[in-house]
Image (cartoon, rainbow, N blue to C red):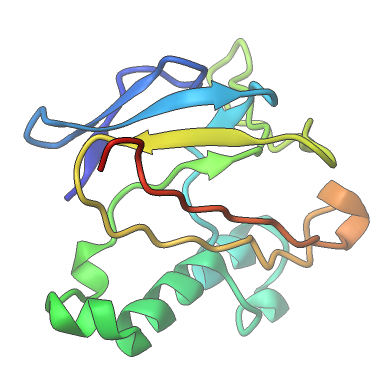
Length: 156
């Protein structure tokens, strides 16, 4: 299932919709304020365009997604494969649109203690890749860990 948001930047209160117009999630809380919806997941191919041909064999978010779908039992249970990978959200990534319509991959504005809280409006299967990008100067070429907390909704 793919989602539609009809805005470039997500913020508290933003609802995410499926390609069928069904609400799938809402940004319930957010103290970072910048999340990219158009830069896409890095791939081996996009890394060669942005950084150099020799970066092709390096890790990428798209590879992480494909690996998860190939190996994870829940993906196998539901018959998911690479064609089920839809658009992604780059939480905490700062990709402003310049006045001439270009994308600019700026340093992130997040840091320790920053978070985004997403409330699912339906059962979801979520793929997460903490971007393994080693070529981007963001974070001083040092990707750092994230923490993911999943809670049952109250009253469930």
